[in-house]
Length: 79
Image (cartoon, rainbow, N blue to C red; front, side, top):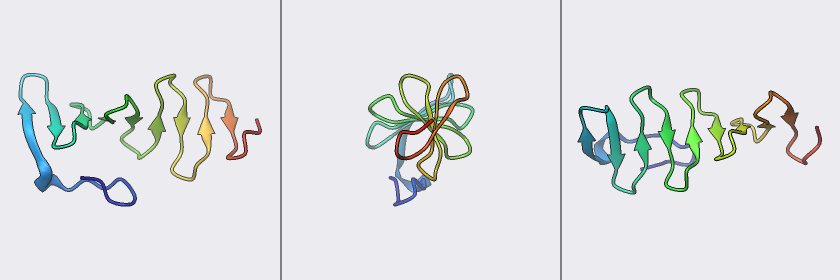
């Protein structure tokens, strides 16, 4: 379902709930109606490829973490 960079292969999707626009992939990954992707552990992937954890913190594709208040954390934990 996912490639090395979280690509989506449309051919693997199986269940579609039309009323909510939510699609469930074969591994339980959920795609919201706005293109937001939720992983099986509650991790959210935004439309631009950013990753949000369950606390609302955003992780960029380069490994940089952005806190819920817009604070940027580097890959080594510095602020």
